[in-house]
Length: 117
Image 1 (cartoon, rainbow, N blue to C red):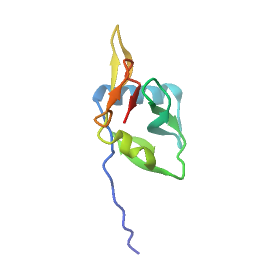
Image 2: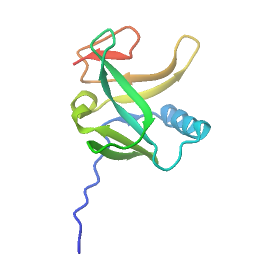
Image 3: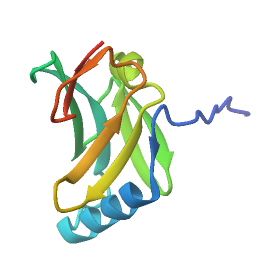
Image 4: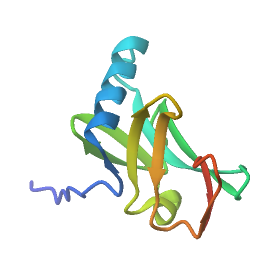
């Protein structure tokens, strides 16, 4: 019996510093087996939608990807909002945290954590 498996490229990219920070968080918080990195959007924020980046369990509506050895899940309805996005980690004096460079955003707020599509 042959299965038809398609490996899809992840819809988002991570910089090296973001990958390193995700591994650090995963190690520090001791996530096990069924924890996936969830990427998506949610309503709210000063521009209408906010980014979602958290460790979570997989849901029925999720698509699963692998990025540099990290299992990533995303609700398929969120794909159109984040396709092509680059996620970075900044650790400077003025800015510390994940940043999102989203080519689908029509407007982005000053904090960089919310956008409108």
